[in-house]
Image 1 (cartoon, rainbow, N blue to C red):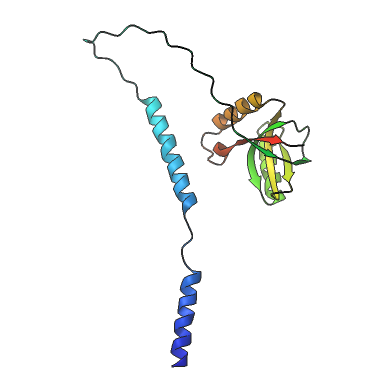
Image 2: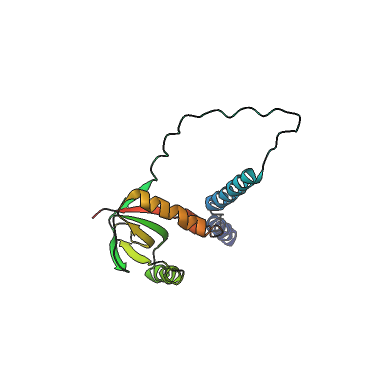
Length: 166
């Protein structure tokens, strides 16, 4: 009888430890991929007016307000490798292991960037920076250009701006 109870408890413990983990990140990746496909399809779709229809005259539209400034994360970081860290930087990768950050830095250097590795002691993370600027607008344009250069790299589509709090 004791063996059956112990075996039953062991089975319950085994099931508890082997339960499925949340697949939230899988859902997020699928959503982002579907959103990119949707945007690509929308930009490829061109509608033409039938030949019989008259085309409406062009109307003057009031100027659109400028887009809000790109969001920026404020972190206190220290330069680990590379040259010249400025106030605003484009971060293309974050790692808990320095060797991984150094590997991505080497790849970015090979692609023509002057990449840098910085360390955030508060979060214990190494950030790989591809470019660094004095102004937020310059950094935002560089981030957008970086994402456009690597459209098939999902990891680079998450590139973000870092403001170094000295």
